Image 1: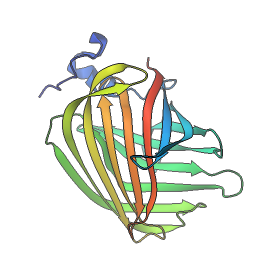
Image 2: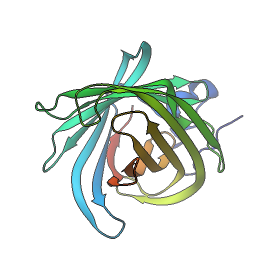
Image 3: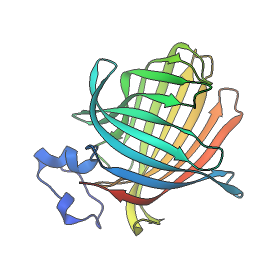
Amino acid sequence: REFSQASNIDPKFRLARDRFVEAFLSLNNGNYWNYDCTRGSETKRVECPTTSRSALGLTRFGGRDCFSYASDWKGKDAGGGEVNYYVKQKDGIYWAGMTVGFGEASGQYLGNAEPAILYLPYEMEAGKTWSQTGRYTVSGKGPIGQGEGQYTSSGTVMALETVEIPALGTVEGYKVETKLDTAGLPYDIHAVGTNWFVPGIGYVKTLVDMKKANGKRLSLFEYLLTGYHID
């Protein structure tokens, strides 16, 4: 089954099937994506640290060969970053876990998902859904604490929509909604992500609404792509 590309994607990304995975989302070493970020409610937003995301290439994580992808947070009251680890499988790109640094005072923590969580399916069609359950382990230092619990993850491809992006102008992107819930950890969360994905480029806009298990909001972030480089 052939993938349906957004109509305005550069023709260089319309590649043969054996190169499809690479064109879908390139995580090769040296590629990067820059985002402006705002935080707050739908009616009141404040600037928060800009985010630079860089592909670091293949590495070992959790006993698997993974593509690593670093995010650095820059701005007032910021300092730190994270590295996320992804596995490319036959039906999509999966998130295997992350390491996060909060500065010298609080050290790092490591989160590991088993099995890895579907991050992006290759088949982008409105109405496509998926769900998973598995084990999530947190170790090291940080606000989440340490322990092992369960995760429930789900996602839906909502539609192909037109979206205005600083780096690209008006483009078509697939709107993808994802949900993640954890249970049994010292710091359980309920996170809803609304993402606009352009094949061959990546996520161009993201809204993240994260709450504690008791419903108290932790954060509401919006990220807009302002620049990128892809080989």
